[in-house]
Image (cartoon, rainbow, N blue to C red; front, side, top):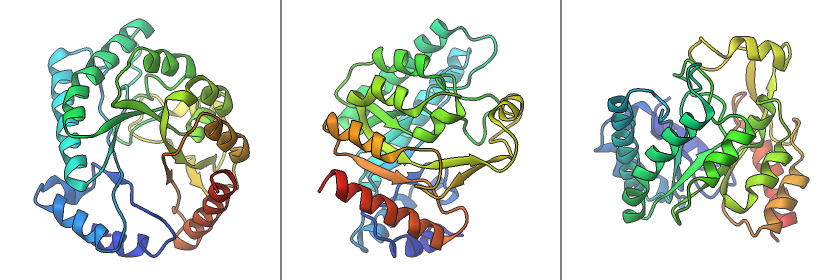
Length: 274
């Protein structure tokens, strides 16, 4: 599907904007950036966030410098699209990487990008991620203790958290435990309800290292039908004054499923932010 086709489908939903992915094939041509922005805005929508996957924990300094340069280009992309938020990640959890070393490398790289982002009116958002499609190892800061330590090590007005409750389950932890640790830093959220089509989390653990991308047993599900307690999540977010974007990660099984996810979230948003 071409991006223009996806836009025409998505704007039919009861949504305010479209989250963007930096790796969309047509985004390789920078001339397309303003074209897609106009197409989205012509429908009265906007592009608030661009999702990117830098690998900042690589042991080679030259590699990390290239990742910083890539992140800055994605920040330019975000600005051109009219967005305010650009996702960052920590990097891969390589076996030789110690916790202190990983946090130091990731924090240094993110901080190297922050002045550039601030100059362009973009906020970098760190997600408690699982694993990028093209990575061999899972996210370095997948576990909440490392994620919270990394977040606590970076203090800048153009830095915050993109909270994804489903990813916490994949780490074998409770999404509410993580949220209570970082809720005061959350500026955006991924609403999702992942599930396993077969097996257990222990089976997933055996598959996630040494294999590029997501495990075959992992799926996104309809929002509100999975393990996440959205009442508890929204109660905590409202308590800390959250008023940011909530992105929908769903639609694997088509538009009807996505419409149900949109309706579920619209109803919940009206309950907690009337």
